Image 1 (cartoon, rainbow, N blue to C red):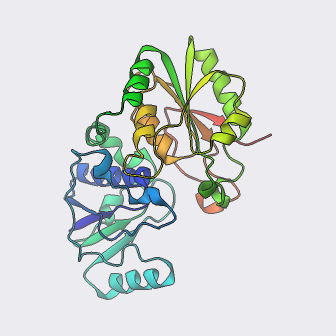
Image 2 (image 1 turned 90 degrees about the vertical axis):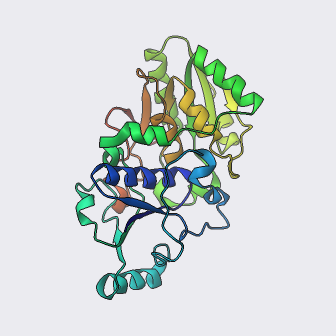
Length: 298
């Protein structure tokens, strides 16, 4: 059995699932391991499952007794997986680096579980429409979201995502990125390229937005939940805009990627992570088709 472990919040689970579809497109019979990941209590958004957002998703699940060492953290988890790889029947294949590795499917064994975040579309380049089909959202049933969705369709709408929550900012990985200047440069670029742009701002830090985004009129989308089983609604609305300015966040990455406007402009931060954190310095997160704008404060 070849399996892919799903972990972390919704957007990261989506990357894991898309990676699994990429393996399937290369001829592997792939299962999804959802049972071994245990959400952290302090991050309520990790309790959301793919099926909450995408009710028709094609999930072939492993049973609860398979690959029980997948998500055990620290030295204990490392040793258990290492011992299983040497002496056991179940093999654990860790994402080797945080960038695209060609031919990962060739590393599969008879009974293995792939563990990682797989944050690049290069892993599912051959099956993009299959991934889009699987990521068909639960239809809007909230009056406010329906109203904004219809407005976005009529306008040259631009979704701006600002990820500045306290949980995000406590990590070195995200320090110094997506500065005020990044958003100013991105908005200026959109104004040059898009006639009569209409801006919609999505954020987990309303105070930061009010203090730093001042030179444009915008609608602040502040009514959707960020942690319960409908925390995907902001992502869904962002995908309905004509164009996107994203944060260094997989959440807005998917909002932009699922945007079906064939003429969309997507602006993404460069660098994506704090360049002082060496392990993540070289990555393939941002699509080659997107506009990269300097995200560091000058």
